Image 1 (cartoon, rainbow, N blue to C red):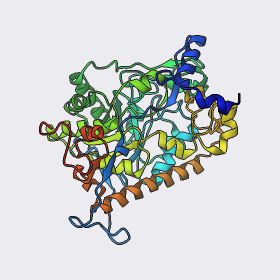
Image 2: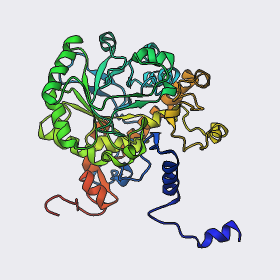
Image 3: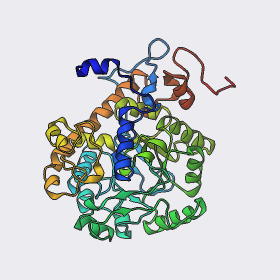
Image 4: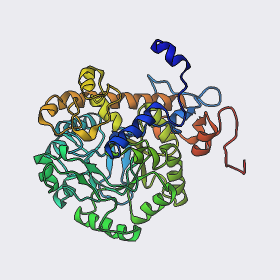
Length: 442
């Protein structure tokens, strides 16, 4: 019997498809749970389930070649003396030196700088390369305190207190020993080559009242110059947003479950948190309830990949978005040019997610010096800048089509949903109806 004949009558189990069988067999063989990078691979409701209502008779569209559609945004207007002025509403998410090579961190700074936006440090401190090449650099303050020092706080343009991450809310980070190089170990004050696991909660506070005191300390250290962001993973978003505002945040970074990571348990990535689609709406409702919408800026992330995603997030009430995995892909991660190298690792371009192993043939998510040398930070920065320009142009195109002269003028009324689930989550009508599940008792 040929393979074709054999597979013509075999019926796969819906409960135990081949990838599930392989995972059970791997666990039985090794006794270890699966750790990987990247983000969630399961399908969840997303911005793809929404559509824009372009202008026709009841509204006039803007002419793309003659009428301006602005994209600038200011972050940190609540308390900071020096808010962050961005030319585009798309920022680069926190990704650590350690998870990424120094060359990749430099490229993120170069790309962001070229289009007038910000990038973010990540766990483990600030490298001279990223500070030099990032005109707007956000410094992350994480539970681990790895690499944290007051001098770097003062060098930063804003501070982001990381409470949670979309890929693993409630969990800490991990950086495996193969990526703890001499330089990474030195910055984090850790032994070289030993697995590092970050704490899942900050040691300095146990609730929003303590956090408010910590934020005041940070403001004193930085002379009230720097905006203070609070980053949360999307779970109990409504209440977490309210508590972040109460604690004194200038901006909230909200990361949905599709958000990427350098390394964590697969079960965490796929089964904890909520998608960014409902989370944006919940955060906006909390800010509106407190009369803080647009006063405390909302930056959302988690699976943002196109200008359509950016425009839909803004229409639902976000002030800006942040990208991580998409930025790495723009740099060259999972490039088909490296197919032969990926095959040697037992994977293929487009599927590579073993960021934790430090064997990235693209030289991006590695501390192997020979691999890292393959990556040119100047070329990588140019590619990232090109990608960010495309995202911005796509966002402007959709805003103009809806008759808006600023991307922040997009609103929920410009959107409809393709599915009842998306309509309920985003609280916009199902396409072709005026039905919003859960609204007015419907």
